[in-house]
Image 1 (cartoon, rainbow, N blue to C red):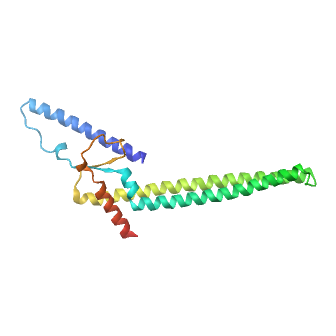
Image 2 (cartoon, helix red, strand yellow; image 1 turned 90 degrees about the horizontal axis):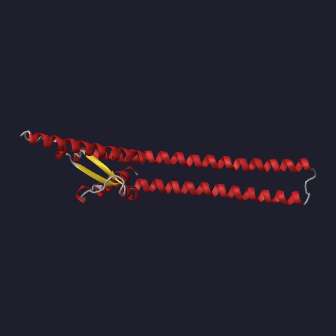
Image 3 (cartoon, rainbow, N blue to C red; image 1 turned 90 degrees about the vertical axis):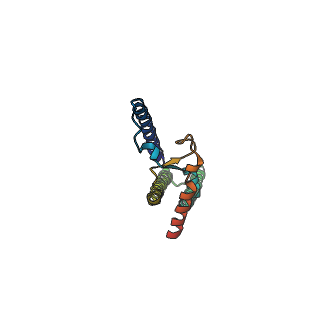
Length: 198
């Protein structure tokens, strides 16, 4: 999402740069008695999409988020269950050790080492499961971005926009007339396409 924001910010900066140079060029031409060149920014067709709304209401995104929440919850439950069992074994070891229930110091050390290994295994499992969740989340983000981008390419074949800008709160777009907001149209198209694939 950050890369998308940088891309959009870059495009906006480029558009402002072109607009500035266009205005400066027009002023120079008018001062020289020339007519302004045809085309340019005045012919650009621009729209914007509210990304927050899209992410909150695009059914594919909702399904991906629900699946991630379930997986996260399963990971949390698995780790909690194993941590509870480990705590129980630690308490049992401590009680036995305090009551001299082990036949030898060597046997107590073996049991202690076994519990330390279980603790390390639990930490390794936690790291592995968290890494899997992060990887899946990255994969989902790429799928979501690809889904939106491929839809916009198809959508724009008939609409002919020169530029479609993303708007996340006040990050990229300081002001735009709502007539340029195509969020609902994009959302309906994305959801219709996603429903058809299901």
